Length: 317
Image 1 (cartoon, rainbow, N blue to C red):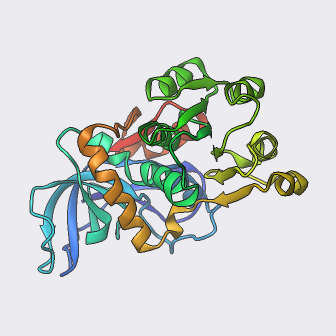
Image 2 (cartoon, rainbow, N blue to C red):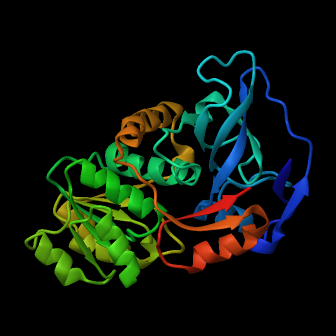
């Protein structure tokens, strides 16, 4: 099999394709032949060595993907050979043409979704679900602001929030990004700094819940515009920021962070059980921005981190 192997942390060029023996699944494991691989910002942070919990070198990156089950251990009864699945993690890394997984990392992919869309589900939609329903505990009728709504997690959050009966405001930095967010269910789409429009939409009260994709830039602004007793959920951050705690106190705001990799097993099961009917009925439809071949992983990382919004980047093995 062919897979990306990283022997030292650094720039995207540290990702190199190597040919190794295809693994055989153990008694409680599943081997998936990959048809598409999802790329996430966390992949780039780990690859660069700028992440809190780094894997032992050498390693194969990747958490998301989709493909077909080609081998299973003797204890696996939940799935069958040939079934289409998407992955939310793996034992061996997903930047490869085969991935070895535990049974809890494998989920059925409905016929209405392509493999590329399946590869876009794992981290983006699980993060969106956790932020909305497990952390913020949103309720129908609330106003939600998504700061950075045109990326993979942003689109996932927009779709899930719209289906849950929230009034959704999304921000984006380009006209194409704004059109994408609007087409996925946002009630209002504005520039990242359009505070007056956001406040006008909420009748001066401010959003009840804010999902923040770039806290080092926006967190103080989030605190300023959030509604009293509101919640700010930090999904993304690339640096430090200064904030005024008095505003948090005076509004009795709740600030919460989301790190999907730290979620408990029961929470992950709840997330994917909750997503399943939405995958089947078409509520969840991942948007793919660009596809790269496995050998182009370095270019894919560059593209994703330097191209604002537009959906999800995919590798094809």
